[in-house]
Image 1 (tube, one colour):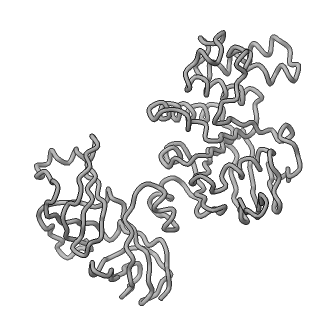
Image 2: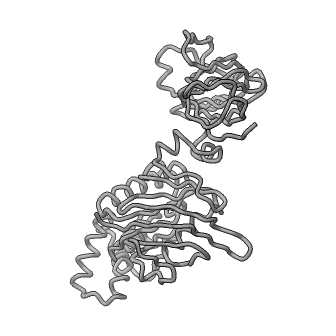
Image 3: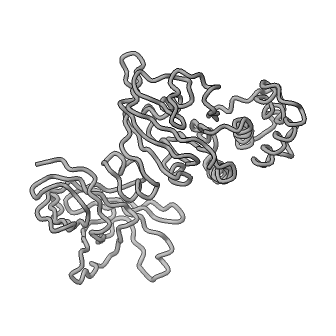
Length: 369
């Protein structure tokens, strides 16, 4: 397989008295599309710069294919970087921007022509070879930057929020193109973003970061469906969190009490004990909303009562903010495809019942007694 393995072991980085990275360890497999996801200032770009050789750690090891590269300059690491700002030469046309790394290496013109044509075709810009960067759209300029980064045939492509300057529709289009390019070239992609949907859409695995630490590493499905902490649950999409005191545990069947709400049923693995306080979470799309109290028929279904504090229509779905009897707000998503089933419309101030399976609740943190 193409690409390179990357291993980060116990890496810390300070900028003055500020610690940007705190004993970070992770492994990225050869050929993987791996995303570093987190809010601004969490350390993800610093970690990318350590891999690329633009910074050195104060402690720890950065290894590429088993070789410690700390202290090696960027041009000795077989990594190339695509920056948010594109960093194209405005006086050179598209062909010469892509050819520039090969001209620096004094590659023969015949090979330069072949390689530039190949990589321009890869990013679907062969018809724009003679244009200057300012004659291109933002998405086209980003594709030029990607072609230029790939033409040296690196083992690792580092992408530092490359789509953040693009509008929402163009970002989605470029994401699909990036994923297709990764599938074709097969090298290791390490992608930095603060956008959850970007990371979920294209990544083989994601590392969620906050305040210089890696909180969870997993597939998009694992990160979304089984968040390890409250921060991960709230950062990856939207969720509802209940502060719950465990009353009984039988296997993975947990009965807990939420102040003002009553008993909630959760089916999940936990190391908590009866009497412990935990945080349990449920995603908005896993909750059903109706005007009639649902029949549970003895199954492990939670039912809550409240009224619609705010309905927010967004085309393909409506987001309902429901105030429970205790005053707590719960968010529910209702797909509009369900309206064809004959359910009555639910509007502002309507009395409603919320229902969700115990199997869809996840315990994300144990807080002790």
